[in-house]
Amino acid sequence: MIVFTYPGQGSQKSGMGEAWVDHPSWELVVDAAETSGRDLEALLLRADDDELRHTRNAQLATFLTSMVVFDAVQRVGVSAVAHAGHSLGEYSALTASGALDFDDGVRLVFERGEAMQVCAEDRDGTMAAILGLDDNLVESACHRVDDDVWVANFNAPGQVVIAGSPSGVAAACAVAKELGAKRSMPLPVSGAFHTPFMGPARERLRKAIDQVEFRDPDHPVFANVDAIGHDSAGDWPALLSSQLTSPVRWRQTLHALDAAGFTTFVELGPGAVLTGMAKRTVKDGRTLKVNTPDDIDALLEAVSGQPAPIAGGALEGEHLFATERLVVSPSAGVFVPVHQALTGTIIDAGRLIGHVNGIEVRSPFAGEIQGFLAVDGERVTASQPIAWLRTS
Image 1 (spheres, rainbow, N blue to C red):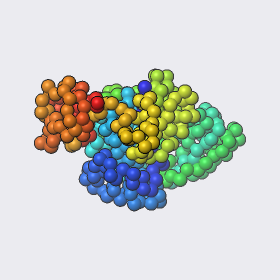
Image 2 (cartoon, rainbow, N blue to C red):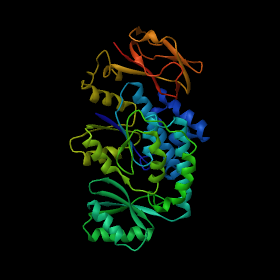
Image 3 (tube, rainbow, N blue to C red):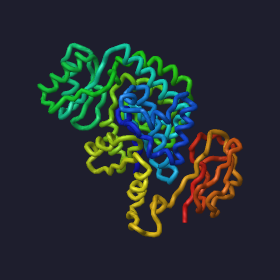
Image 4 (tube, one colour):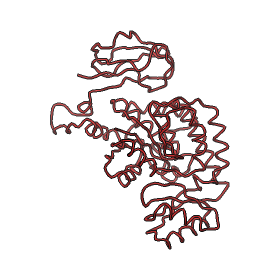
């Protein structure tokens, strides 16, 4: 069973969008720029690491890159039966699962980044990673300090992040060292995220959350605050609000996914932080990442169980490794099929199968249509699967 995971702030890097500029999924960057009113192409292509370190930039850039990667993976027919995102990545997971409309996801991430940036500027805070110490002892180190410091992230065995005031974090690091920690490592962040210091940001974000519509996700999304898979739309407003001031229980989430039978953990987005955490936490799990279009071939090979193509062979590329393909909506709107009776018929690439708000929906693939995933008159979002087919 496959679970898609989505990274959070800290995975961003300069030029992380370059590999995707010529990919069809890059259209999401254009859509998001219109929604946010920001030059997101510049953010993904030309912003330096210092600029991307700002919370308002890091969050939008990371979310958008994950969405481009997810869209590209969808286009070749690879799907998951659960989603999970680390901190900011939870918004990517909700958007990928269909619980959030893409535009609403952009709006919430924009507001979250702005709110957390302002909050961090108003109150001095920092974070540090404690390595080589059990979770309960890290919590004990925080409790032994008479200052503002809390556990912010349970990332993996022997890797816990604490956050709070600079003096509180420094004191807790010293106590953790006395308790046996191998190392404490300051993190280059501007605030104490996932602690009570983010209270004002939570209030601002709550107002934004109230303005969007949540839907039941297509598959469970595992939440940061309780490490439980949720499949009800009504759960998420409170969960997202709580997330800002609560620790991210990522290690517990990985254990929950493992216990539920998930065997393949695929990280979609920049970096490989979550891949490393999964390797350390789920010993028998298979970990994969997709950062660039070239990674899609490796993903398809892994999930299909077929070998890579022989160099110099007549056929090369991702089409070799999967027989299922999804046709996705080119925009948001109401879907009207040309004919539902197309199910079971063989079509050529470019065949018209319907319209969304008058925009043609054509299959980029040839093959046999297995069924429609949207019905006549259904309101769909951009890149939402419309139909699926089996290629010859």
